[in-house]
Image (cartoon, rainbow, N blue to C red; front, side, top):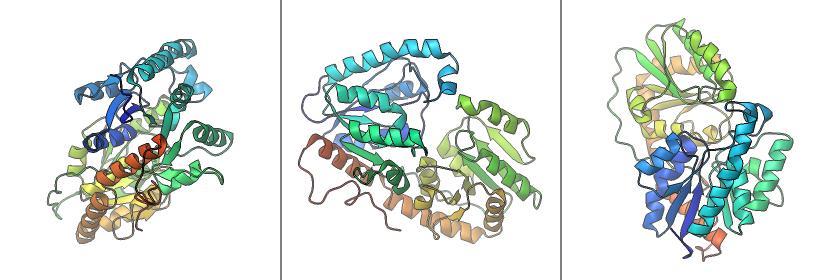
Length: 389
């Protein structure tokens, strides 16, 4: 498995499920491989994520993950602090052995939560690219994470302008490497007759605005029963599980909940997609909804406000179920507007946010980290990653 040729990248994936951050890099791997890069992955094992790596035929190693977050509540969650701390030595020892064996030119750390893995890679004298799919929190935790990221990594990049700003300081600017939309099949012809189906997809949590979606559904259903709602998402975050269980136990009429489902099949069945997040760096599912030709209603926050423009979607204030309900009702009553928005959204997703552009930006980051020659004026921020508003 040894690299040693300046073209091997070790990708460190965080979490045990196949989430947006993992899918983002997995989808672009074939394009980077066609450019001569070779990859090996480190991920929690056993886990659904590790199973997915093996299913794709990718080279991967892993150990049971020691942590799920950076708080006492996360550390104490099942299976408990003692067992989690006990896993750490085995986990980080396995990562060190993989670094020595694979001899990567670059270690691609794919999450802020994988900061310790980035520190290990730096201690092993490796060049680190930190591609952060989160927005650092306010306060000392965020300041500390930002400082450590820039000390550890040769390149620090967010997945949106909002993310890059949060990761930047006056002396240490962060780059932007936007995620790419998959080239989904042309959308089916959506009928203007019958009920309108509105859906959202994402882990059930306050951050994703699950409660806002359900309250908007209650408001809409109070005015018409010709709109149905579908909530797709699991109780994957143990810190939000009790909160989410209470919501699911009191679903409004006309709302169906499915814990896990194929995202593309779900999107193909919808008429309107909603993303009412209170905070969201750059949700991959919004790009997928846009690529599916759906009319999208999203919160005017973070990366969502960069994904959607007035001619490709509808932005509403975060945390405002009445505004979300009003936008849904207006789209329900205007099928032609839904069609126009969906068509423009698909063109934007597959053009401005293509996988090819993501691959180009990642390659520039790898080249910058390794010191290989780069294209003139090539910066992941200025050459390929900024978007046309």
